[in-house]
Image: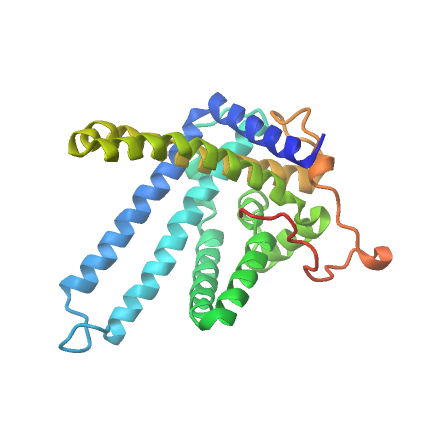
Length: 295
């Protein structure tokens, strides 16, 4: 089985798990709604409290920047929290245990002391990388490469926090060790989900384009159909990504293929990285991003 076939198979198995437990799709929806609510509240506070530092309104007062920092942390926490709940729900399904949305949220609630510090770290890194990417072409390139490396190394941090219930430092080390063990080939599954999502988006974009070509009446009729389709695809792919992330964690940590993914050639997709001298050292990222296009 080629890596493309494995990638496609992982996408199909993730979809099968989602179909068997449709409640898992609620977590991306709740995350999106909560993120919008946080963003609107912060914008309303900045605008309503008059936090501009000049009469022209082109800059914020110090307290305004405090609110911006709060917004970054709040958004990071919302996304981390619901991802944690998704991981908890997916893990229960993969382990053959019954579970509900409430059960998964209860697990996330029990890990708040782990999730909030991680959200702060994530938000801080995001701000630093955003600022770095604004420093010209070189800064943009360096920022994106560092961001890609960070995303790869920390890909399994949330599953580690949820399932192993350990501190941030230990979770980062654990995630890094699992990444070293499976190398960057864990992106095979992510690439497959990205490709599937892209292909499924095309019909929605085409329907919207047809509606736009037909004029106002066409947009009124076909626009909502396209939006519903695109939102549905986004939710499904986000849920499938969380399922895949959980399955990858289980395989990387135990070496056993999770229930629902039987028959997938994980060894072909997640072959351990070869290191010089066979000592298993991290050894940098040289050559590790070949073919990686979607995180």
